[in-house]
Length: 185
Image (cartoon, rainbow, N blue to C red):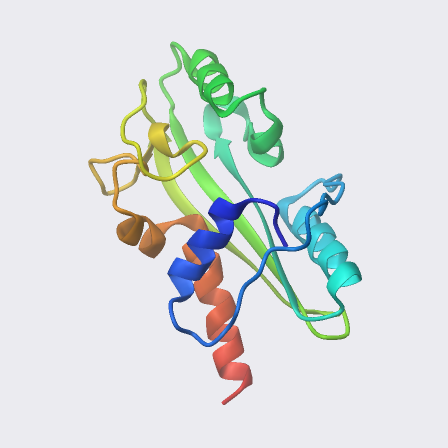
């Protein structure tokens, strides 16, 4: 349940040949994300996708939470500024002269069954910090300024394969896949 083709590609790459087909909702899928948490927004998206599809739905809500900015941009990561370039510039400006640059990507995933009922909800996180200038060309969003803990590269400098092993979305999706595997054992 996303209109973001980058997210769909990440999900497909992370899942590999798990036997699940992932498809984007029809054009015009644009649920009103007015929840106050990632969990609420993920559920809003899942319910809207179910309303139009009447089948199993997986939705995520994700964002970048920066400690020195009291968790901002957080829920508003996609709406933090106009273009993605403007979002990054705004974030770097607001962190100017801040010593604490720690941050985390958060992803909440909600899975609804064929009847539209929540059967699983989980959160994945990826911890790191915000660098002072962009580095790398892979990924999307805030990846060029997010340095992953334990790595010397930003998320945008990592290969797609490496990113899809450690990202917040990968961590949440692994939980979903583990749940589905245990459910069908």
